[in-house]
Image (cartoon, rainbow, N blue to C red):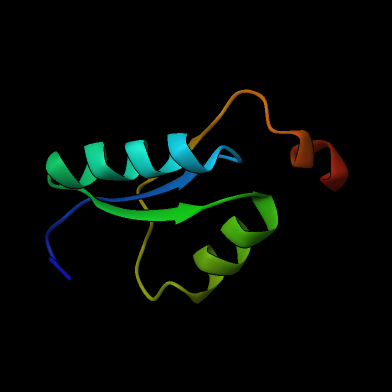
Length: 68
């Protein structure tokens, strides 16, 4: 793990889109954490030992409404 990399938590329910986002972020020098939905994102964020610098989410995610 690159200790100097900016950390991005990417959340999208579309697996293909999530893989593409993760690849683009890594090519750009970011440390990418990928999650397929809001609950997984919360779990990964809580378990991650460092500060997460950016949360990147899709605009439409059917599972977001389940958290309201």
